Image (cartoon, rainbow, N blue to C red; front, side, top):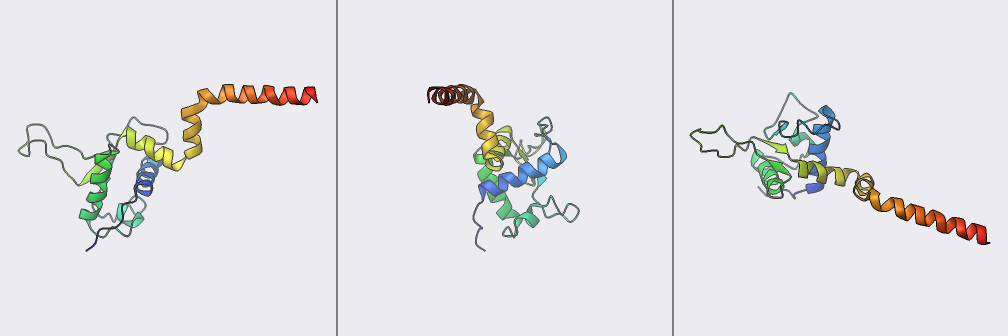
Length: 140
């Protein structure tokens, strides 16, 4: 079975939308909110496999999650300390990181992200442009 094309933007927006549906504008639960990687019949809107029908198996979903984890956008929860698995990763769910949340916000709201990141530069540019326009109007 071939692996479906990884869709970073869509995948991160899905995670962002799912998280913010329950925790709008609140990052305090980010590390505690997990996204299951097993097909769900109880959460039809929050099910990864319904959103991405090209993912046919859990192992395909894990490949996508591995890519986002390598980029720092998600994390797999770790097992309990001092367990027999020696803190090995459990790949049954993932959590969205602050970096992933910010990247998803950038993908979903590019203009808001730009304004949020560059507001300090917009004030002097806006003032100087306004002054220039006023001078042009007065001088003509």
